[in-house]
Length: 217
Image (cartoon, rainbow, N blue to C red; front, side):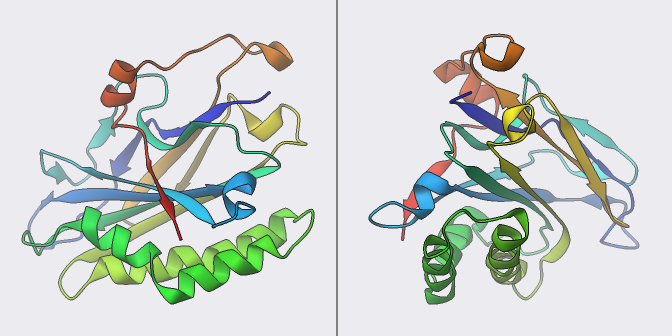
């Protein structure tokens, strides 16, 4: 399998983060990087920001349209591995642009150094990738939180080409905490390994939240 995409099919707001108010202004910021991005002449990663138009109330389930929902990664050819994280933030400061804050966060010196550390590892294992990628996500999440906004949940995943099926394509992975129940879906985009053929048009990418932006560090 060459090309995949990773998306968020939906999530559930398990409890309000803005008590005593039941409605929550939720933004999902995502970061992802793969072997090709790490080993490029300049390390690169993909970012995306999904600001929900309507507030979400306690225990409400939000389902996104399309095969993969909101795009976190791709469509792209990862190489040996791909790592991604979805960061759920409850917005209290409406004046902040979380998309701009996300881009500023990934340009920090700390993120650049961690990405360089990943590049230096030949044939990384799941433990190696997550041990270095975790601090990247934690740093970005801390910056996104700001002074007023609340960090609700971070859902991370690492997927490898040498699994069966590659990258766990076709599987949905769920995780939750007190506030959020989140899901990540890996979508195979060709006919190999017995998977159905799938192409993603520009219109479908728009419905899925737009293709993530690639940032060179």
